[in-house]
Length: 307
Image 1 (tube, rainbow, N blue to C red):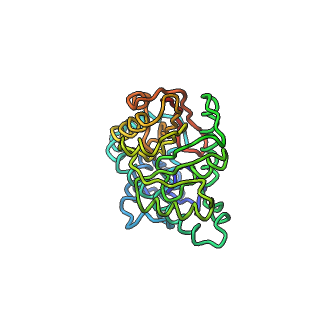
Image 2 (cartoon, one colour; image 1 turned 90 degrees about the horizontal axis):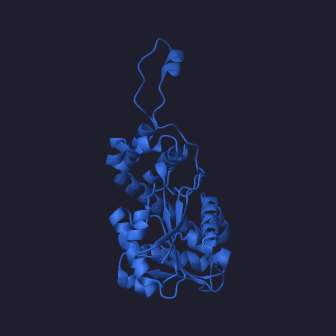
Image 3 (spheres, rainbow, N blue to C red; image 1 turned 180 degrees about the horizontal axis):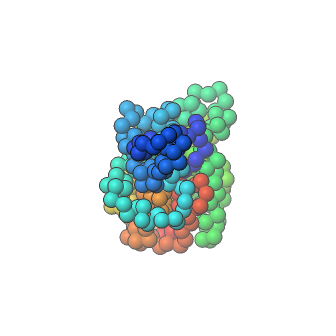
């Protein structure tokens, strides 16, 4: 599952809920049935995903992740605070974030393998079902950066933290700016897959892969030298403590004036990705500049900050 986009691979199906009370006939049953609440839909998705034998892409997981994302982005601002205050969601949120992160990783791994095995890797990459939403998110980030006074180009050196096995955001940003780009991840298998994929779709070494831990100051000091922009993926730091540790390591490693983009989430979308507060930004040693909350299918919010 990749919540940064919503194009569906298969038709969505309703999430099973408890049976409605018996009615006198089928028509009455259909009329009297009470639709599940947002909380009930999210809980049902979580429980069924947690019971899946695997989170690999497939009809069941695709359907459940699609329903989950659609539920969380359907009504921005409408009763979100009350929904998030429901104890059932409070209790399962951390596990649901874990499930979403694992599902996203497995989906990206599957597509990285497909692209690398293809005789036409560029066409195969373009067939990734969520690629348009990656384009939208990158355009949103670059627009927010322009508004904050950052002017990128071929002279820029950008580091993308948390590139994963399918580093689409880094690839699209590189192509938009013709810049030097480093894709950084702490997973050796993810780095190896990303390296193979980039060799197929962006040969020539214009995008490097670097194995480093974003929460370790010594790693960041070595990896972020001379960067004028750092982009922190949403899944780098899965809770508030971990996110602040990452931001402190980044801010300590870059020069004053360096821009740092931090992907976050708002309202019900925080059931899909960790949110980043203004207190987190400041505690991480960064100065908040702007915050953009998309209202379309793009799930991630975008912080623009400056060291």
